[in-house]
Image 1 (cartoon, helix red, strand yellow):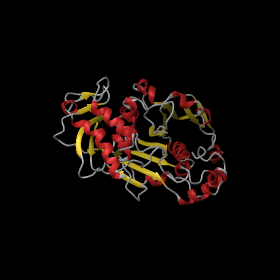
Image 2 (cartoon, helix red, strand yellow):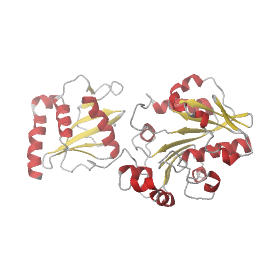
Image 3 (tube, one colour):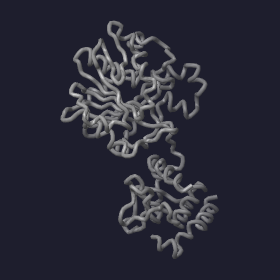
Image 4 (cartoon, helix red, strand yellow):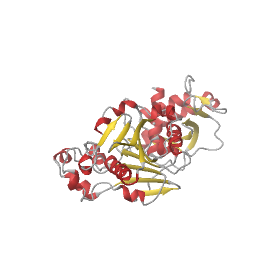
Length: 370
């Protein structure tokens, strides 16, 4: 079987050595809105996310990912409301697009019972508590018009659903820069804490890539400089949700791993493999400022994509106009035999990737060629 694959692979990739090629040298039920227990009863439970653990690390940027329903948004809202009532500190609530604020009038609906003696309401674009402005909501996509607006009382920013799922919306161009500009507008020279909240969708997102965030195996919290990354894990919550009717219905599916066990829904390790020591570098791919080496091993009958690239390899393809620079060849509109072979091998299932991040980004690159 291996020999047959190697022969087939050699027939395909072997063409890469011809003169032409040589010269060319991508809340389980919304905070558990099934209302299993009222909020005041839940207060005594430990299975829901507690923001105080993350706060104890005193980091400026805090990335929190977790299963649907563990209370990420709820916990952040409770923290913001309490801090305003006790100290008068305001907050900014961020979503990516204005369309995501359609349900903002119900922002306090799930938490009002915890603050029976206070009036919580939304008066666009502000959150009002006891008749006073406690915070405001801003769409990241239109945040640049906020540059002249002062926020002297704001001490916290909550960016909800910062990781996108597959669908209609896309990340903004220069997404992280857009957020950093918004942060600078709000914070000025002050230390304003930012909490980025999301379900566990994919480790391949602009923020993890920009800040090079990785969660070490066996740890639920890690820090890097002034950044914290928490992957919310709670066996009590997992056990409780697994016993619900819906939990039993989805048992054994990828969605159960995501909704209950907090595994990243859009990430899988199919085709993830370290390149062999006998691989040779064919060319490089530049995508979103990252350069990947594309390698081949004729004996194994496989191609590999890796962060490693042979320094002597001078053929680098840029996949987008933004990535194009001197010493690269723009892939779009350029008929390349090497790229054709790479895509063909991908379709035939003989391409391996050294990490899930590389695999996800290469999937995006492949889509550009189809």
